[in-house]
Length: 331
Ligand code: PMV
Image 1 (cartoon, rainbow, N blue to C red):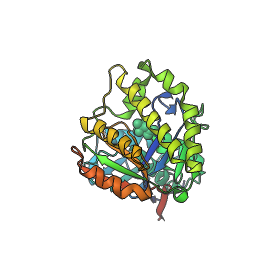
Image 2 (image 1 turned 120 degrees about the vertical axis):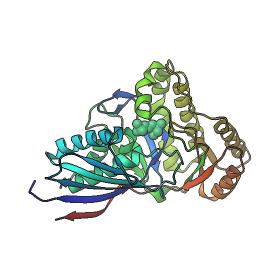
Image 3 (image 1 turned 135 degrees about the vertical axis):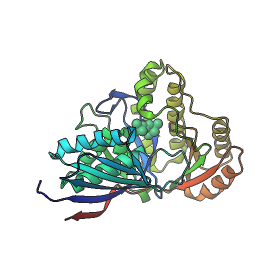
Image 4 (image 1 turned 180 degrees about the vertical axis):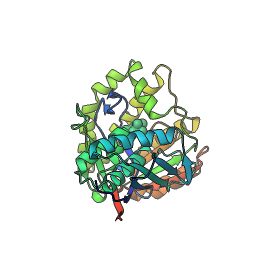
């Protein structure tokens, strides 16, 4: 590196997994026990600026306008260490990051945060890496961040090493007219985060059974996306979400993410489907219900969700694009 200060800004979207990632083969490298597939969520985004500086004494982080010093800074700094090692840098960085997700939506931001941080930090550091390698680096910050780097519908191969655990797009955002209609039933931060959750997945007697069937569910799900076959898609997506939550509930100690409204919405979604709407549900490590539907049914699903008891807010997200550099300055 020369004596210059380098800065870049990236944006990235969170993603919603249709076949879930839950549990690692290697916690440090965040190598998952099964492959997964997701879609990026357009309209929700993280914007991150990274500036590397020779004269900085330590990494700094401003997150949603707040100067962070604790756990959030440590996690960002540990991720910057991974990038420093890859790019052979010794400089520290200042990081400015903000999410546009409406406050209190309970939408996890770690995927979009670590995807944007990775892409911005690598560009600012002068690295010219392939998308595949960017996905492996993003994975080290948060597993699901690997899936927020490529565009649209994205498959993350579990692999068996840092290099082979990468993500790639299987279809562009406009390939299939599906929409994620998110029923927000709680805006609270989850009590047990996913990093801890992955570490306890193996304590459930059901995890081995979930993992044993994961390759087959992934195949069925990817085929359904590529064939735009909503009926097969709905069946496998709901099953995979139910399996992950069964593992969570039977871990030691057990993790219950559902609220009463969560279950009521899941039942309602199944009734709507029986009545002919193309809609299915999936849940992450929280009580909010992601209702995936074909775009023509989205308005009906949205207005149906709004009047259900316990629903605080409803957000809508069509498939989104890749993590992108929006500004790159070298002074
Ligand atoms: O990337 P993490 O550690 O935040 O884990 C994500 C876990 C789930 O959202 C529950 C499932 C998934 O595949 O995104």
